[in-house]
Amino acid sequence: MRSPGVRYVPEPCRDRLSVGRSTRRDKPRAEGTSMPTFDIIDPGWSYSQRYTFSLAVRKGNWMFISGLTATDERGMMVGKGDIVAQTRQIFAKMKAILDAAGGSFDDIVKTVDYIVTTEGYKGTADVRRDYFCNGFPAATGIVVKELLRPDALIEIDAIAVLEDKH
Image (cartoon, rainbow, N blue to C red):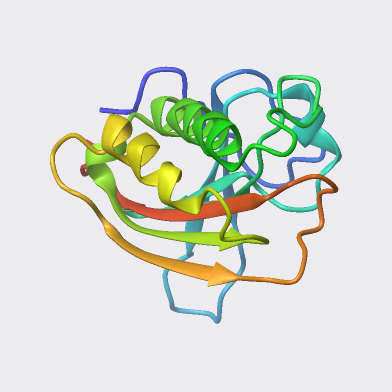
């Protein structure tokens, strides 16, 4: 059964997606082989339409969530100067993506935190505890010189393994 709020649209898909839909992209392969597909998961954030990447992509049971920063529904930074507030906003956004794909934080198997400062970073563990209630995924933390988004102190990407589609 397909996840609620997820729509599969054949390629080419030049028009942008609306709330809670995904797009299936079919890419040509060599003759005699099956066609690979992946679904683009988009919770409907209007500001994400200008990006040249997908917020999340599902291939089979695997879902890859692109690096998220702490922006609001208008694309404005939330929690300037506060890595914990930014982490909380990122996890709220991640929840919206998981919901659109029919998943949950229990499905996340790996996260990567890219941080520009270690100041206050220990406080992000409390945010993780709020969202990962049934065990923690594998995780990596990397200190970087800067992130693309001005005022971003942290960016998080994730990998999830979702239930089979029926």
